[in-house]
Length: 217
Length: 317
Image (cartoon, rainbow over all chains, first blue to last red; front, side):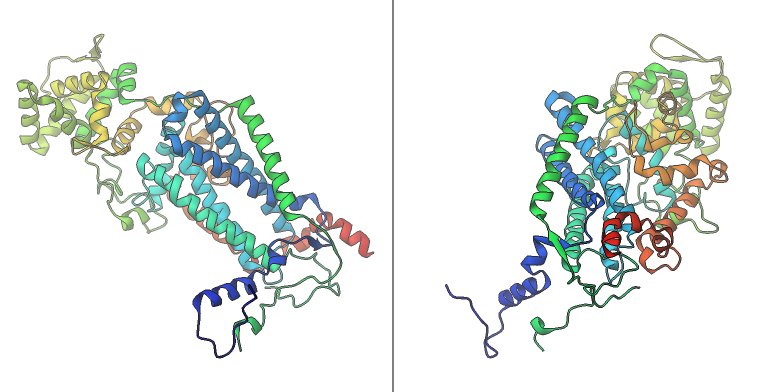
């Protein structure tokens, strides 16, 4: 089949317009690059990919736990091991994410009109704290009891507890397995696409011939 | 102008030297490394799962504290009964200056401590127990002053109460009205596990997996906190960011938890509201760093970036 080249007189087509906008916004060679700027030569860049890989494992192990339900891991050896993987995946996810955040802070990675990339990453970190928190509340053990008893006062004082009741396991569980993972996934996908589209921020105090049109806030 | 010819935003695009890179390979390698780390940690350290405390555990372990807490629910002096929003209107809740965010949010998780924790559960077992039914009727028909007189008398005598093997309290003779038999029935119900079920159901039927009433009642007593303090989980022991045992817990909450350990928050009656206000400010600063002069200049001043890009700077020189 030959490539279709729209003419000026062709009738409007939403699908074609969507495709053209998608290709324009995210050219394949930027989405899946096989080269990087020469300055991307530090192990610190790996922590973003490690955080992403950890998130994938968090979601996969969470899906396994969801298949069997919230009581499974209390009564099954296999379930307990999957829960342990879920817990440690969260721990390493936060570790890699924090290192990634600090690295990006010290790179001032928001330069060159990349403010939204920073903001999306920062918001993803904050929402991840909420997701992990609701996970701890969903354990149905002594830790979740105590954490909910302690946390309710702060949330109530902020007016949040009226709408987000940490003592309501049903509410916390649905936030943990549906709403917050959905938000995090959307934020992280958007964040990664922004990184790919806008490129990796170049070094500071450097105006190489290759860098163009910096718009420092 | 068509969309495809529209000018792109002014991102700083690199057109200088490049190096080979394999994005997919890097992501796959990272995933493998993460799986190895996580499986190793799961196999070596497992995960904590200490059984939750029930109301029954509490009544069996410390009948006196259970009974005294139940009296405080009846007389309105318990933590829940005097909490304020979102549970009731007994107070305005904590404030940031003159502002009570809790009051603004309103009473949306309505809890009547006396009715929900004591009277309503007893009503579920009163059918077939004429004496208990009569005592509940007496309590409900009594004036506020009369109720206060009974609970006050009970509270004053409770220090010398004795408890039999079934947790039934025995007090010196006094005018306790229906309070004494009601609490004897409640402690018996709790020890048998019936109170947990009664507090967990909605309108006596629906089980909504909502632990609000159980947890509020449990938290009003001292048993839960004592168990937590024994596990080094108290509010002044870095509280909720920790977990039982030696697990790392939610270490990322350190910046929130640290304020509870230091004055003036440590001793403030409005600590929760003040700390939440402070954290909201920090959160906004964190998210909007790129727009805040001074903060956004820290990377340029500290020069940590010269370490990250040392190869680049060395090559340039």
